[in-house]
Structures are given as C-alpha cells and as structure tokens.
Length: 264
Image (spheres, rainbow, N blue to C red):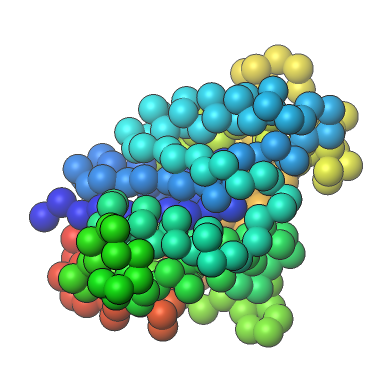
C-alpha cells in the first residue's frame, strides 16, 4: 500500500540530515515523500546572503530531491526569523491537508535553534487542527489525524530523545544519502564547517570533499552515524547506520499496518 510521508524541517538541509536515508528507502519502495523547509535558508552562510543564497539553496535542495526520488518544497519565511504565528500555522494546516500524509516528521521542541523550535511548535499546533472543518474552511479537513513523530537529536533537557522506531539504513542507501548531502554545498562544505571552526579542513577537490564528508566531521552528521551504536539494543544484526524517530502524542497512534508499510 502506497503511503505519503511529510518531513518538515526548518531549513533546506535539515530533513536530509535527519531522515535522508529513510526517505531514500521509502521512495525506493514506491512511497511518496515530500521534504518541506519552513524557511528560505538565507541566513545560513558567512559570505553569501539574500536572494543569491536563497536561490542557491533552492537549487541544492532540488538536486538532492532528484537523487532521492522525492519532492522538495521550500517556504518563504526568512531564515532566522521564523515565528509561530497564527498565519503560519494556518498555512501549514492547509499544506498538510493538501498533501494528506500518513506520517509527518519534524524537529523536537527542545532544540538549540529557534527556527527548529518554532517549526516543531507550528507542526504540533497544526496537529489535530487539520481535522477541524471550521479551521481554515477553504481547504477540506482531513478525515483523520496523521501520525506525527520527531527526528533524532542529542538534546537532554527537559528530556532526551526516546525513539519508538529505529530504522537500519543499508550501505547503498547510506551512499545515496551522502550524495544528497553532497548537493548542499553551501552548508556541508562552507557554512557548517565555518561555524564549527574547521573550514580549513575542507578539501578543494570535489572527490576528496565527498570522502571528507563521509568521515562525519560535523556534529549533526556524527549524531546520525552514531545512532546505530547508541540504539544497538533496538537493532538486529550488524547494522552500521540507522535513523530513529520518536512518536508524538499530538497525532494518531502508530498502528501495526502503518508500521508494516513504512518501517519494516
């Protein structure tokens, strides 16, 4: 049975980092996957900005989507200035209704970046409301609430990530995920290394850059690489790479049918 999965990140590379392998796996199995960035990415660089960076990041996301076989939607909120307003909530409600997903993934509400936190709040505020006919009446309400879940992170306060689903990512799809990340040049080879103080370590040669990226030099990538070790007791066999998700109490319960369709 074909399903629809919506991954909502704050920035144009967030979904790729946290759920790129899962997205490739779903697309390969014939499911529909849509990545959404709540902001346009214009703040994510140390040298570029404005419309030039917005267009660059839009092109990077489109290239990554082609590799994964998914769709990518970038909304117009300015990067670094996202707020959980009623207007943005209603836009998100309409978007979720139009796409009618079975599963929605997003950031947890406790996170270092305000855009991540507010993305999480907007998604959680839209949950349940997507089923109310008198809310945004111009867009037909959903008959039932999707399952909502959180993407993996390592934040401990007020509580640490508690995975309900752990997905092993096989080597061929790990390679495809890194191909996706390789498309986000402005981030993985420029802004994130600059912000981490390791920009001088990034090779100039494209092939060597890709090899460097696969060493997981950036904290957010290392978290994903280390997920299999952290969650070893939840995995069977010799799994080297995994992605994990925590089901939110704000959506529908994860039933056996959806689990079998998407996670097994």
